[in-house]
Amino acid sequence: MNTNKYPEIKPGSKFIKKVYCFIMLLIVGRAIEAAAKTDKVVKKEVEGLPNDLCFYLGVMPSGPYMVVGKTKEGGMKYLGWNLVGKKINLRMNIRNIEAAIQVFTFQESTATAFAHDRFVVEGDLPTATAIVRILDIVEVYLLPKIITKLAVQRYPKWSEMSPFRKWTGRFIIYGRALGYGLVKDIITNIL
Image 1 (cartoon, rainbow, N blue to C red):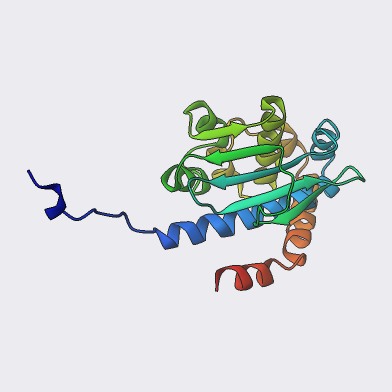
Image 2: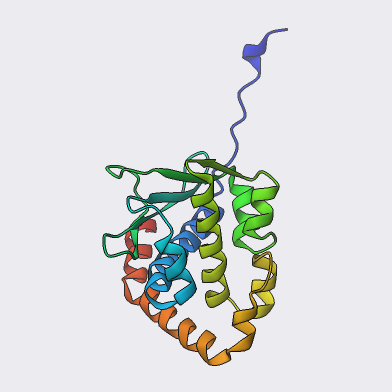
């Protein structure tokens, strides 16, 4: 049998799914930065993280990525999507674009995706679980309750107790996340 007669079949690039994942990572990265300044629970989680923390969350094999680092003041800073020149000590990758779409379309919670081995973590596992807790809190602020219940393992009780705190925090996080040049980043990095 001559294998040279049969051309290699290459999969499509899934451009739309990659763009969607890029936009979601961009919004979540900026929301983490804003929540670290706004929410008490996120501030407490960030205090427990290592001082030199720089992590990324990305989609294997070739991206997109979200890079976030801890600042000297104790907050979080969204550092963009480029990995070059950054000392990253925690790498969190979603195994493929299909698993990323399940997580980012809220068909599966982040914790469930971890349990189903859809994430690859290189670095300190307790730090990675703290990042997942921060992601869950950010999702509670960003999403309506009906969608958030799909996105997080357990809907937090603090968000049901004080609607004023939740809505105030939501507006502040949205304002800070969008006020940091989100539209500019989308236009310059995608188009």
